[in-house]
Image 1 (spheres, one colour):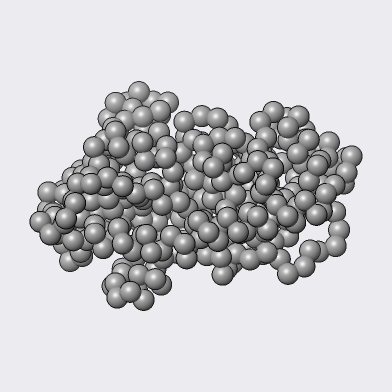
Image 2 (image 1 turned 180 degrees about the vertical axis):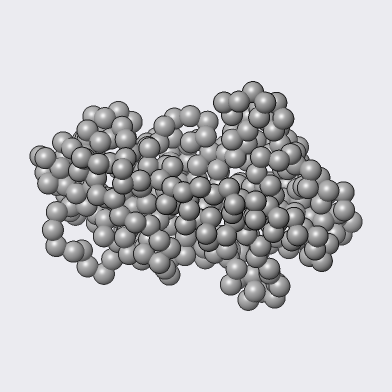
Length: 344
């Protein structure tokens, strides 16, 4: 969606057909039931696919129908409708590591099939690309998660008051903050540091120093601009290794130093000691956050380095030419491709 204006500027006609509605998203963030919106979404998606042959190429975010086999992706391939799949999460682990054996048995290799029948797999990191290669996908390109650096900007001026350590995410992912609550309590008590979680579930942080702010697309940048440090704690498990570090990129684009768990792509994004720190154990988090809290010049220098890194590689402007090139190739008829089965 971030590239939509660029597609149109280069002469593409683009139609967007989301699986779920805004009402689904609102229910998700409110912790309410979503069954009705899910059914409506599946029906809308099925109707949209009836027009698939009108298009030169389809871009699918992850899969067409969650928790259904890859029937429709196979049909697209049989109809010679090229499709591109985009992964910024290890979605295949939703199925092959599912707690229920029946899901693992029926859908464990689903995403492998989706990748294999695609014209192009866009992977956000090497972990995801490795899985695509193992499936025999025709072509794979690693294109990182990006932000629009015109929208994400450092704050013009820091607000007066205590240092703010911030996190942004969803109610489901705020669980990664739970092990750090003792860290937050100690630094809040000893140094007066404020801790903010944008988009978290407020009930999960009752009676803790964590302030829960609501998330919205309109306010997410202004919320981050009120932070002094951005954090991204993670567990070290297969699902987390597939993440693409979006939070870190958001923070860095806003000129913030970051502290993150050394998991997956975080090791690539965070240059330890230059744009932030990697922290594993509780003691590491206390040490790094304490150091950054007391050194304003260091925070500014790290934030500036992170901003430059985003502009160079993790920005829409940096990746748009690559994306446009591979999309043109994916849209070509197989018989007209020069290297239709080459892997990138």
